[in-house]
Image (cartoon, rainbow, N blue to C red; front, side, top):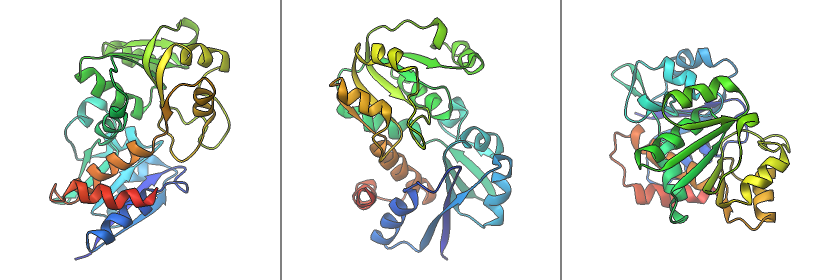
Length: 262
């Protein structure tokens, strides 16, 4: 019986997840289709999941935290992160997982000797990345504009700062998890502040993919080795598709086919 998958997000037009998953589905000879769905109201996510008779779905901004609250059950690292990016139908229930954390960790592995990390932003992706690095006993700091979200990170034992209380230190890796630069030409921070941070950092990653964001352009200008979020998207997608198929897929083959989307 043919399986149905989609990605929920807003915006979602730019997403290459359907292309990525379709390459893998066809390459592996699976009987399935993968679409995209612009979901304006995250509260309707569960309703849409069942109305569309989906077997699985991915969730992108801004619905990852709402997805977490909507699941019948949440498993793995997603329970600690409080954000879900992968949904799987199991025995009539919507089960939530998070593959962003491992996807990012794998994508950043080419940058060696990472011990001190600064994450810009405090949404679901920032939670995923901060938690997996904390599990590896590394030094993680969060920098965000609003105080409310910073407070949650402080309560969970992270160094967390608002813009007005932050002074730049030295970092091995700086990660932009905000949407700044996705559909505009904004920096995630005031430019002079960002220059100060990047000048004291070894590497930089923007989780936005297939776009030379102002954050990445500035890192390149300052000769900081950097990369976009394409590899994170790839590796989280490989893990997600395998979850759709109960971990029965050979991930090296999935990776090979999904890479064609880039």
